[in-house]
Length: 401
Image (cartoon, rainbow, N blue to C red; front, side, top):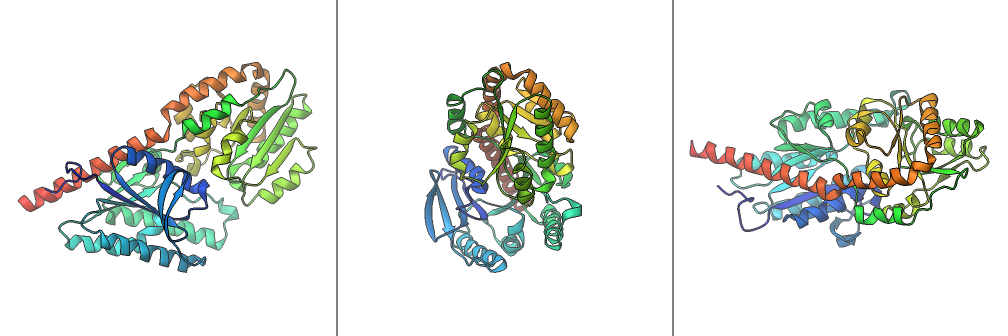
C-alpha cells in the first residue's frame, strides 16, 4: 500500500485557488495556512492567478499562472495550466484541494483517476455560500448561487472527499459523513495582530469610543442599521464614532449617509491586508452586525478572529457563527437582535462599560490563542491525513480481495 502519510517523502498538496495574488484580502487565509502546513511537514504548492512564475506574497511562495482578465477565458486558461501541472506530477501528488468554481475543470482528472493505480485525491473545500439577499439578486447572482449549489451536490458524489469551514456549513450542504474529511475555521496571525493592542490608546473618560467595521460593505450585512444605531446613541448623550473600511454594493449609500453625520461615521477604501493591524490599533471596539440568517450562521468570519487577536472588545449580533467562538467570553457586547434597537442596546452597554474596555481587550487576545492559523492548519492537516489513510486503506483492501 502506497500511503504517503507513512512514506519518507512529505505528502504533496496542490492547492488551486483561482484568485489574483494581488487580492491579498482573499489570499490571506490560504497564505497563512500554507505556511503552517509546510511547517507541519507538507509539500504545498499554492497556485493562484498572477504573473507567471513563483512569487513571494507576505512571506509565502505562491506559484502563479497568468491569464487574460476576461471572466470565462481567465478561468479556462488558469485551469488548463493547473491541469497540465497536475498531469506532469500525476503519480507524486497526494491531494488536490480546490473550491467550487474549479470542480467542472478538474472533474475530468478525477474521472481519469478511476483508471489509475496511483493518482492524486481530489478534495473540494467549501468556505462560503452565496451571500446576496434574495430581493437584491441580479440574474448573475442567481446563476452564481445555482452554480455553487450544483457544484456542492456534484462533489457529494464525485469528489474523493470534502472539507468545510464549519460543521454547520457541512450540515447545510448535506455533505455525507463519509465524504467529510474534516472542518477548519478561519483564524488569525497573532504575531502580526498583537501589535495593535500594544499601540492602542484607550478612550479617555467622556471621549469618543472608536468603533470599526472592516469587510464587505454589502446591503445584506446590516451595516446601515449599525450606522443608524450609532447616530441614535450619540443623540442620547453617548459619544461613538464609526469607521467603515471596505467595498461593496451598499458603499455609495453608506457614503451618502455618512456625509450627513458631521464626521461621526466615515467610510474608507479597502486596504491591503498587512495594513489592517495598524488600523485596528486606532479602534476601541470591533463590530460584526450580521443578521441572523443561515448564510451567516454557517460561516467563520475572519474579522472576528482578527479583532480578537488585535485585543479589541467585540460588539456582535448574537448568532451562532459568533456564539460558537465567543461563548461566555468576557469581551463581548451582545446585540440580541440585528435591528437598530438591538444594536443600540449593545452600544449602551458598551458605553456604560467603557472603563472596562482595556481589560476586555486583553481577554479577547487571550481567547484568540485558540483560533490561530496554526490551529486551523492543524485541523486541515488532520483532515487530509485521515482522508488519505482511509482512501488508501479502502483501495488496498479492494485489491487484496
